Image (cartoon, rainbow over all chains, first blue to last red; front, side, top):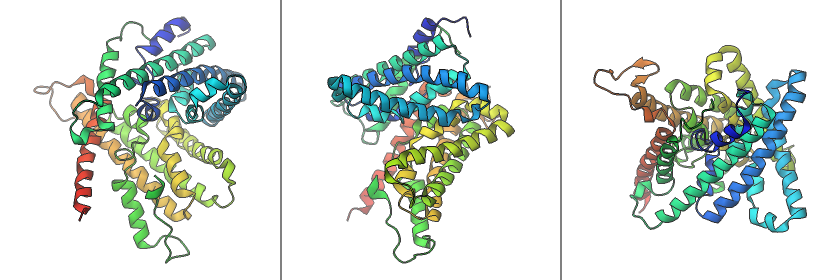
Length: 196
Length: 222
């Protein structure tokens, strides 16, 4: 793995291994926040930022603190604590230095703590043995991939408000099926670049 | 979601589990308020591990274990947990049970642990467990909370098993690794094992549940 450059991993994480469409992570917020494009974009930006930050931070903690002490089995609890602390810190930082951005992101920042994409990216980083730069590339790419998928979905759902959907399919069911079609479209990128 | 939580039973003061309450809790978690198909919670893992029936069953078992355990512990500690830090306390309790299950898988079922990979760890962020701890276990006595955890876990496990069954059957023509649809006349539909199949089958399942529930509501109307 170590010979793959961070840039390749970044591109792969956006297109071929999209964290949402091929690893199914972050579905809860994907379904809840994809009704309108500005909301979706706000969440996408916040997720990208937190993903890149926490994968880097968790990398350092895992390989320089947990691994030497032989405490790998504590990774879940440590990762989730790091993510919660990071989100809290970012929230305070943004509120202090850029109130405009703070109001734009609104409730999304605290919600991100329980977004499984964030924890999932950290766990994938460990199971795939990424190096430090690769981890940053992966975290950043996964975030962009998530943002791309959720913004596309918001656009589609806006169009869908005018279409005549059978009653049982209204709501989540049709969104799931459309996501499936979208995942199929993204599968067209497969083979462009390949990571695990 | 809060209005769906049954009120503490006034007739029994000791165990908190009189017959009616237990049954009601069980039915709500399992059918009328099913975590996946009605509340649309915890679908990340529901999509990711259902490419084979075997994986789905293990994941269902994991969730039942974690849900029962964390509901019991959260409920036992509910009177002494300060409100401000209850979230952190809940996450810590849930993570403990997830680590237990993960270590158990690693020790006895190494192959399964490899296949499920990070999705076992992701039970921590599974909204079902957190949601039940927050919405039910914090207000109810331990035994009822355990029943509730079991009911929700079971509801999740059954839906996972249904999706896993159809995806494995249509995607590879097998059930639990045994060929059912002979390759002579059935060409396995690869898309069902891959990501799009997961989304589409869950979509159809939710629509199916919607059909049943619509009918229930219409029946109830005078």
